Length: 268
Image 1 (cartoon, one colour):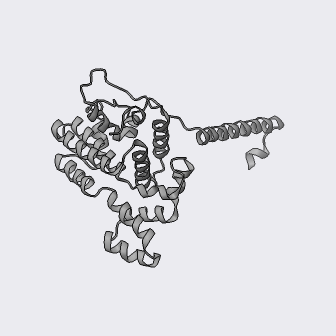
Image 2 (cartoon, one colour):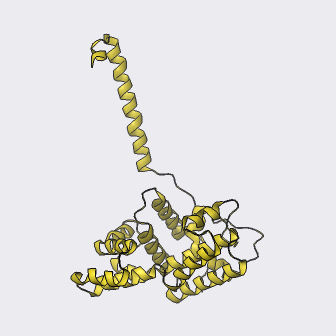
Image 3 (tube, helix red, strand yellow):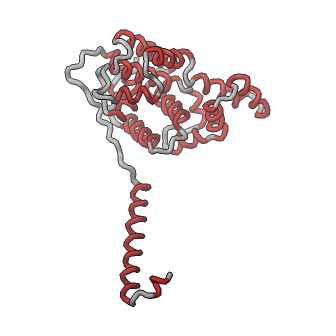
């Protein structure tokens, strides 16, 4: 405090202007960052030299939200040049063919359906006092299972999806999360092929499986989209880095834009 006591009168004026200027800059920047995050615009990129069939392009559209986030073509099996595919796969712990097939077989057999189907049915049909024992019997000590239970029983996920305008009624989540599993399978196969972890033939085998999974559960892009965003929300709900909101924005663009794959490719 001694230095302030020794300031001349004009020193206080200069100091005051400095405080006001700093405060204005700080709060205006904070407001800008909070109110209007930067939007990623979906562009639905296409390779004019693509040789894929309509059915194959339909299959790739199952992973449309992620395709737009990564800014990749919607009509090629090849994902993206450089290390992007490898970095994505390493984020899932996929570094080898064995690692890829281990995770892929899990998503084929169970995926996130293993969590949602049991936990949602339990909440609807069992007294709450039975839940701890049923959860322990089914999952043991499983952090993801506990997270799914928390978000579903408290209505956090339903509330988020209603607030975003993606669903209207809580009961709409009965549609399940098979679309999210199908999307992950398509995306992983595409990236693993690009990173030369699996062959083109194997990539299409997995993608075809994912396509049949989607068609067995849904009869429209609308239903598929609701299931996808439900599974995505439950899986990514606790991330704090802005990724969730970016993906929500791309998802909304896919729903609304007449040029998006979900609005130009017929569900067969």
